[in-house]
Length: 267
Image 1 (cartoon, rainbow, N blue to C red):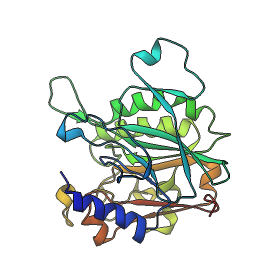
Image 2: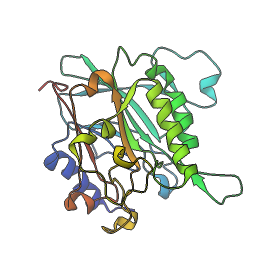
Image 3: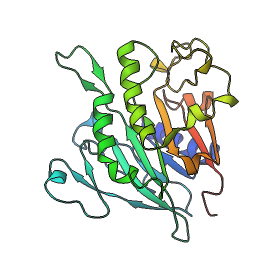
Image 4: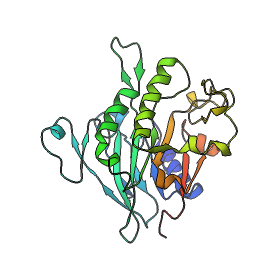
């Protein structure tokens, strides 16, 4: 568990150092009094008093939260226009992001791939819950050609490692690409050197970056667990930077993915 001071320092870094307009966070809670869409996974369990908040740090932005209907109630009736199913409350937040004139810029999705134990309890995977949450988001994806989407989070899956893990991650990414969403990190790989010591089978086509440090050790095996996907219309003006700053690593064992969308925010 992070201390109050550590959490405050993390939000200050995002606001003051990265100058982020909008934050899609996981395993976190928003700072008090901020403009945020948030629900804790379990307020009664100290290990899960956090969720996947969407936080607008720029006052020019307005967040309009999508109404989430918790399973199984969401399957008992036809949903209203702004409603979405919610099979894993707190792990996935959805909000429309509006500029100061009330124009919808895009729909933001903060997603956490909570691990699920397999039968027998010998292994766990992030894919099962990711697939359920992606199904919950069908109502957003089906209109993404008209209303752009930006989705980011700690997926807890990777195409680096054992074949079963690579297949798990590939299945998740295939679903996102089927909705014409683009992997922001992979699409900007030409501007970065290839990740050294990467164990993936992609060879020169490897687009991985390290976003996670096991035990937050600088010498840990470089692993990517965090991703950002966006609609084609957003990617056309996109700049993507993975923050490998020691000041940032001191605040988390996951680094930040910084997306710059030209003209997306009205000042």
